Image 1 (cartoon, helix red, strand yellow):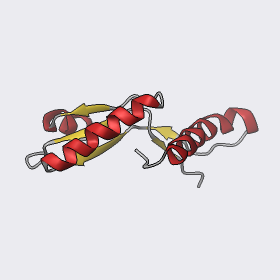
Image 2 (spheres, rainbow, N blue to C red):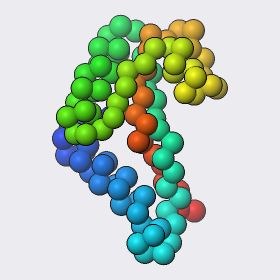
Image 3 (cartoon, rainbow, N blue to C red):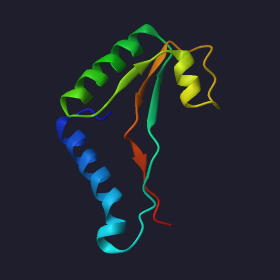
Image 4 (cartoon, rainbow, N blue to C red):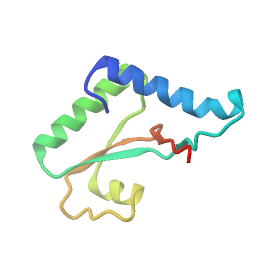
Length: 98
């Protein structure tokens, strides 16, 4: 989750652009919608993640605060015994044109 409205809007634009370039322009960007997870190990960080989730929703982004167990299910390679929870954004993705 980005810090400013401009950064959020730019990030949304980039995701839309990269996901459509292959069909529109005939070349692949390597865009893959895989989601993102941001973790919290303390109560203060959980407060911040809850705020980020609320802010995301105002921009139409589906963001879910999850517990440590669910975070481990979403990313099985991660250690979760020291986590308070996490923020899961299912629509996030990555691009790799190489």
